[in-house]
Length: 64
Image 1 (cartoon, rainbow, N blue to C red):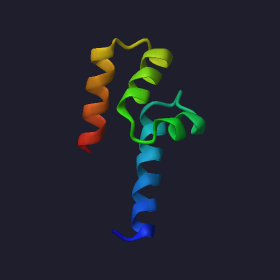
Image 2: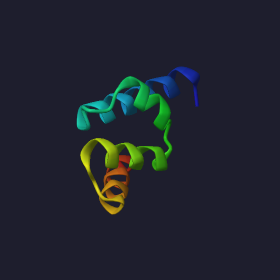
Image 3: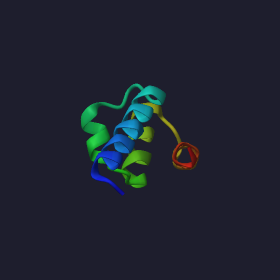
Image 4: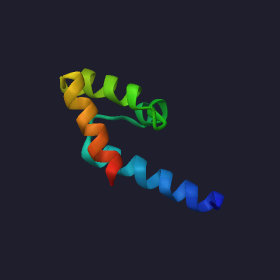
C-alpha cells in the first residue's frame, strides 16, 4: 500500500474516532494507535462503559 494512501486512511480513522467519541483528544488518539486495549480503557474512563460495552464499541467501529 502506498504511504500516502495509508496516511489518508489513518487520518480518516482518527477523524472518525473523534467524531463519534468527542471526548477523545489528539493525544488519546495517538495513544490508541489501533490498540483495542487502550481504546477500551479510554471508553471506560471517559464514558463509564463496562468492558463489554467498550469491546462492542471497538468491534462496531472497526467493522467500518
